[in-house]
Length: 377
Image 1 (spheres, one colour):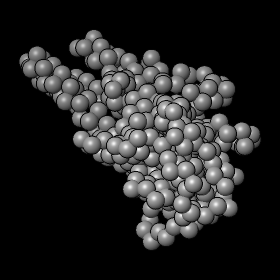
Image 2: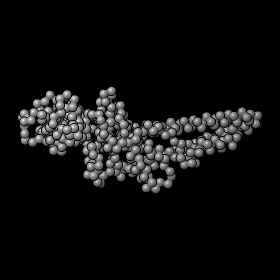
Image 3: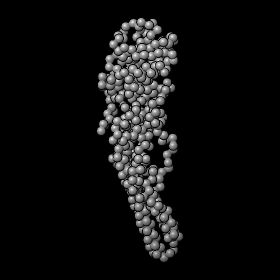
Image 4: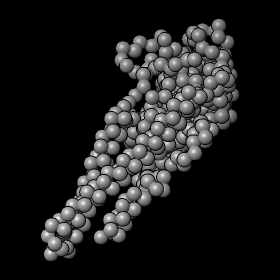
């Protein structure tokens, strides 16, 4: 009887003696997509509803315009003259010119005189004039909660080809992250670039957060080692802590919608603060979770030990009172009672732990950060 109780206690208390707790099975690899790079993010053959800068919008506008010219059925014009109207940056005109020339073989693209009138007939019949205008986000009227968008428009002059427009928002970190970082040498940022599209906006946001968590987690693990924590910290605990907390460190987000003909997909990137205080907070929270779990298992082992001792004393008392006539029945009853008692203790403790986890992670992972605002330091 004693041997049975000791074996039961050692079996249930083994996580405590080993210094670790049993962990849930690893998630399937396809649930946690690999993060993409900024270069992979910018390469997409489908048109998005919005782009992260004037330059990227200008490149997409030139691609659309080149496709429209090719699909018109008319011979390609030997010359396309791009003329700006209003406050249009020369960089934008150059982006359009370069992209048009790369997508229209044999066509000479030039930037016209900004002082010339856009409605003046061309002297060369084969010349195609196109007027480029830019509407900045501050000039856009936006009564909704969406980001104020700017637009770049190209309009052919005296030509049946329709005018085309592309929308953009100013997200310099999503357009050129290297330049964004170089302008902030004393800051540390991480961008979550999900590798694939999503079927809806909340899913795209969740995938962006997971991609950002994948980039933050190695920093947190390195910080834990710097702290000098002697006990082993399981990587699954750090991952869970980072993923459940990453949303509160998101400073900006950029989402795109793609109409792929057969379906509409979404893609999103998030800008996350990876400064020293953020990494310290995540490291300390992970260590606190580890300590809490070990204390929980210690309390569990103590509770089970006390329960087994009580059952054993009760068995000795009843066996003595019945003068040994019901020894095997009492032993069987004691074993059944011990097993049921241990299961009841484990069930109550696990239910309490699940309640604490739900309270600690009450902030939903898919909660959206403020639209259109990024904290500058």
